[in-house]
Image (tube, rainbow over all chains, first blue to last red; front, side, top):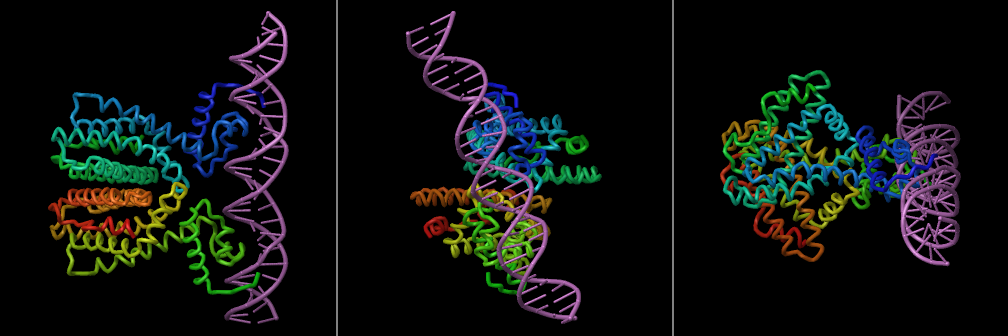
Length: 228
Length: 228
DNA sequence: AGTAATAGACCGACCGTCGGTCTATTATCA
DNA sequence: TGATAATAGACCGACGGTCGGTCTATTACT
């Protein structure tokens, strides 16, 4: 094979790129190291020069995703014009916008991530994401408690619970996507809408917020997302 | 090897028994089919006569655990003397009792289940458990809504969220166990207690119950569990 | 400037392990 | 007694990972 030399940083990211595409498309277990290096145009030796194991590649992928996600969130904490509720709503709005924007890829991602053979991939990413998001969320709640805009006696515990709930949303979104793909878009949208409503309600109740202060969904979101 | 013949039912359960011990101890991925059949005293051919794959064995294990757990819960639904809140409290009390009774094994189980190499095992079991528990929980909430003892506009959605929260508790219990094993029993117990307090609070708030109506923990529970 | 030395990116044949298959053999029962 | 269910274990191919070695770019020295 032709010998092409690149900077370690570039190579590493290329490998993670390939891993992301392959893992998401075929699952972690179903992707072989040989698949990765073929796609990356690299030898086995080179691969193991950069990553200690296939698992380490997964770890690096999860870490990169967590980092990216954190970069998206950080501005919200720094914005002094927002109170805690505003920050939470901004978080939800942000994630909505992203979901609709990237619906096509996201659909694939969701479908891939929740395939039963992909639990490992899913869990690693979720773990990394949660680890990165928890301090962030805790800080939002802590400030909210200070401001008196919400009631979270133990901000970290409450934050962790909110993140646990978020997982449930992801699962339901996947169910809705599958139902929509099976042709039943309307009822899937209805189901998703109603579920997100309940989710919002739960968040409000946990933080003792007045009903209606948290807007996790907006009119037509479910349909727009599922129909994309 | 001597040829021993047993009824399919017995063999199946023996294999699942071995799988349970081995998977929990060394993890699913780290346990080979050869390990299982060696421990069960069986040939490869016999194994694949009963299970289509190693994965199918895991599935069967998860299903059996779910079935057992359901059998433990069912009496609660049938008891007419309990209202919804009573049933939830009974559920918590039950799980507390079980936790303290079987603390030694449970410690192992928890430690095993949350080892990073055990995500697959953990997830499968959780999935089976959730699938079995959700209708049960939904029914409790539905009746509670009917009785007016709690407020769950969408019982299934709320039930699913409560189950999602339960996961968080399991994770925190694991963290506490590790901390306790590292010698810091007191602060681990304090942490766990405070966390369970928050968990109870969240449940109450989600269901709009008066504060104090749900008792997930009781004085000394965390210490008793961790010190066992 | 020319050259020797070093680092480390890169290569691919090879190996051990593991899930799973296949054929042969033995028990059970209609 | 023939059919079928149960058991045995040799065998297979794929896969993750290793290893000895090559190639190239940079640095150190004369």
